[in-house]
Each structure stands twice: as structure tokens, then as C-alpha cells.
Image 1 (cartoon, rainbow, N blue to C red):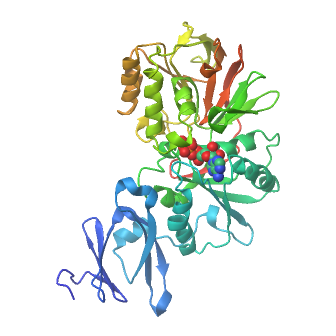
Image 2 (image 1 turned 135 degrees about the vertical axis):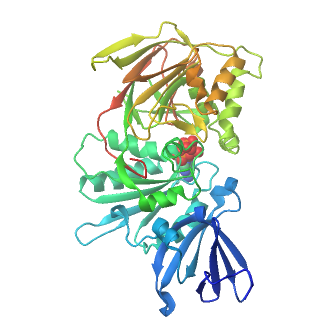
Image 3 (image 1 turned 60 degrees about the horizontal axis):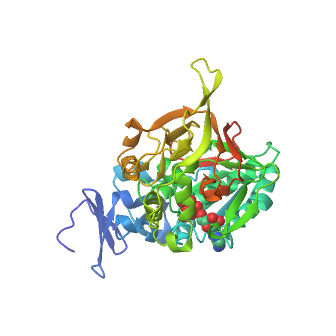
Length: 457
Ligand SMILES: Nc1ncnc2c1ncn2[C@@H]1O[C@H](COP(=O)(O)OP(=O)(O)OP(=O)(O)O)[C@@H](O)[C@H]1O
């Protein structure tokens, strides 16, 4: 036996482990192979009584480094005993309600894999981490859906999730996607006229580019967070907003080349952000296969091109009238019109972060349902770059004089732009082009039709 192991070591078969600071240090006595498991990489500990021995199975995520979160594999080791400190933090003896079908209440579990989300790693995250995780939890009775097109999640939502919710079925949808998959579900549920149904639970495993909802609710605070949240989290209703558009509004498709109708009275729902100006333009411009290769850097690259056009053109000033819907101190509604008609950054958010470290709304509390406006008018591009950079430094931009940061109930924009390129609106990553002379009106949505499984309350 190696002399590094002492009497506090843990034995099971040929594997011997002991706690060393923040690690579980294990050695295989046959092969001498060593394994160090960081305590923070442990997802959970399950009671395990296989091979006639009573003990535990430690499930952990094996990552080569922090930046390779997307390549994590779920691994497990079997041990006979563990320190109580570890057990009190990680032992799972019972599945949470949202994963636990009982005789009186069956839970339909669906796994949705958005195959082109982010840099296209959703399927390997399912195969390498989620599938083995569910297996160890004893969960094998679930449906797996892989996206085939941009419409897959909406079709699934309409034909399966919504129909079953209306039929009173409890559902947990484990969604491997970015914000796009989430907003597809939101849009379908809120566009359904009926409200009487069992709220489906969404467990988000972030695989997108921005992952605003996940970044804002702690699902990316550590490599294991999405998995520990699936097991330890509780359902909390997701706040949302509606955006009503003038009748000529259309979705853009096919990297901005195509158009798709939204309806004669176009209405789109979101749970993250609605924007116009630089933000909407950079999301639209960077949503191409070419840009997507760069992950979240695509946003910065597109921002740079918009602020400092390579054609040598001036930075665009966005022309339109913006009215803010607000409540006074007594809760009475009033309208405040932004004085100037030229704008650069116009964004209303329900979440704090739009991507990792991009703290656009530092006062937002997860799922608090408050819509906050971030706005600045035309300024030199270097200054705009500096302000956006401050958002990466803990949301410092909101203290700048040029920036308006305020709570709103909604807003209306009347677009005064001749070129449709500058009439693009972003709702949770989707791009909507408004017709000349068109408008958008955004309001907080009073209904709550979907839950997020979360550890924040
Ligand atoms: N098989 C597929 N074929 C075509 N489009 C797909 C397919 N799978 C997913 N998509 C589309 O790819 C996009 C992925 O969106 P998602 O939000 O998951 O990732 P993201 O845009 O990289 O992340 P985020 O929204 O967090 O920045 C969606 O528009 C979705 O409809």
C-alpha cells in the first residue's frame, strides 16, 4: 500500500480514497492509477449497495480545465464510507418531485437537445454527462428529442408539451440549449389562449452562446451547477414580457436573408431581453454559421464592426421615438418620453447577465420579474466601446452619466428609419424586422406559464 495513505482512507474493492484538503484522493491498488476528485466537481453521492457491500457511489464531472466545461464527462467511483462533511453536502437519498414519478403522480420527463446551440456540443454533453447521470439516478423512462430544424422545439412544444400540460400531465423538460430553446417554449405557451394547465418544469442545461438565463440564475457558476440544480432545485415561475409589433413585422430567417410571418397582429414573448440599436444589430449580424464558430466572441466581433464599420462609414445613430411606461411612487402608471430622437443602445431586460460576465443589469435579482431599461444616445464609438466594456467589469456602466438605467413596466418604440437594417429588434436572440413607420410595444406579462428548476428563490 502506498505510504501516502493513512487510517482515515476509504476502501472499496481495489480503490482507496482519502480526503486531502479540497480533494478526494483515490488510488487503484491494482493499477496504481491515481485519481484526484475536486470536491467542487462532485455532482452528488448516491447510496450504493451493489456487490454485497454497502457504500456510496460518488458522481463527479471530469473536466480537464475550467474552460473545457462543455467537454465534461460524468464519471463515478464506488466507495465504502465517506466523511460526514461530504455526505451532508452531496448525499441524495430521494429524487426531487420533478424527477420522481409516484403512483398518484406520474412525471413525464423529456430531454430536448438543441443540436446547433452554441458551438454544437449539446449532443455530446447529453451523451457524456446527462445520460449517465440520469442512469445513475435510476431514470431510464424518458423521451429524447433532438432538434432537426429551427422549428423543432416549437413543434414539440405545441404538439406534445402544451397538449399534455392542458391534459393535466406533470412534465419536466430537460433542455440542452441556450436562451433560444427556452424562448421557443415560452412563445408557444404564451401564445396559447388557454391558461388552465399544469405548469411544465424546465431544467436548463446551458449549451448556448449567451446563456443569459443560465448565467443570471447561477446555472453556470460552476461546471456542476446545472446538474446539482437538476437534483436540488425547486420550480420557480419564469417571468416574461410580451412585445406587440405593428402588422408588417416579420421574423428574419436564414442568416437574415429570409422572412417569416408572425401573424396579422404580431406578438412575440420573451423571458430575457428586448432590444433595438447596437445590441439588436450585433445579435442579428453575428447569427451566421461563420460567426457562430467564435462562440460568445461573435458578439464582440459584430459590435466592433458596427461601431467602427470596415467600410469607413460613420457609426449609425438609430432614429425613433421611445416612450417608457412607468409607475410613480404610489403605483400610478405614467408615460415618460425620451427627449432625444437619436439612440445607440436601447435594451430592456428581465435578467442580470446577457452572457458570462456581461452584467448588463446589476440590480436584477434572479426571476424577480422586474423589467429594467439600459439606454444611451449617440456617442463616439470609442466611448460606446468603453461603456459596453464596463458592463464586463461588474456592471459599472450603470453609474455613467450617459447611461439611463431604470425600472420600467414596458416601453414603445416608433421607428423612424428608412433602411430596414436599422429597424431590427431582438427578442431573446430572435430578430424581428419592422416595416417602415412601424412600432413595437413591450409590456411585462402578468401570466406565469412555465417553471424553471432553480436553486435561487
Ligand atoms: N438541427 C437544427 N437545424 C437548424 N437550426 C437549429 C437546429 N438545432 C437548433 N437550431 C437553432 O439554433 C439556434 C440555437 O439557439 P440556442 O439559443 O440554443 O443557442 P445560441 O443561440 O447559441 O445561444 P444563446 O441564445 O444563449 O445565445 C436556435 O435558433 C435553434 O432553433
